[in-house]
Amino acid sequence: MIAATDITAGYGNGADILHGISIEAHARELVTILGPNGCGKSTLLKTVAGFVKPRRGRIEFGGDDVGKVPIHEKVRSHAVGYVPQSDNVFGTLTVAENILMGARGLERETRERRFTRLMERYPALSSKLRRKASALSGGERQILSLARALMAGPRILLLDEPSAGLSPSMMHDVFDEIAQIRDEQDMCILMVEQNAYEALTVADRAYVLTVGKVAMSAKAVDLLNDPAMEKLYLGGDPDE
Image 1 (cartoon, rainbow, N blue to C red):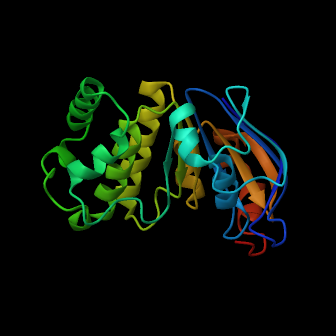
Image 2: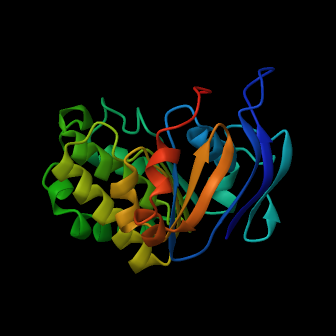
Image 3: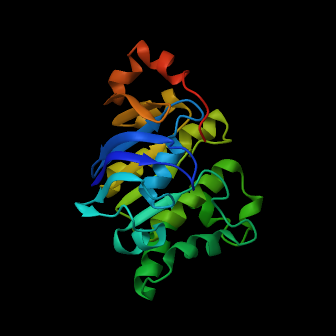
């Protein structure tokens, strides 16, 4: 469902950060992008999402060329959900208001049905609907950001460092939830992650980047057992 081919990209008039990267992800598949800080993984996700336009290459969603389509149009026309690494909830809004931010443009019946379903799925949020999002724990805020993205009914979910700032137990809970979303909703999930080994335990496949290029790509279980994985993961130069 996602195919990025020979992507070269960077910010403004600066140097290229991505150098001819090609990746793909399919429905009911969780693909993680790994690598050291500065290797270009977040830039790649932002390019796929539409925050950064590729300088060369092609990005397709379901066979449609979307390389020049901004993120807000992708959300509507290609059912894309995007969860950023930071500032992923509106702290001054309540839990309910945050979730409903993902329902813009939905008919009332659809909005109410999805909201009810999400509250059944996330009882911890259901009991705090009137609480400000800023009062939630880090793990609860991450689940809230996922719930808001799911409210729109995405077929593609893009996640940037979902474990950032979480305790080990919260990180396990968030990763388990992401895997369940893939399994239950036939969703295509592309996830950038710093915690390589944790990500590989739930992912189907992975790409390992170093200095803006794909250094390795394989099934997640194979990378977990590859002695070259750690060496590549620790290499690279800052670029973002």
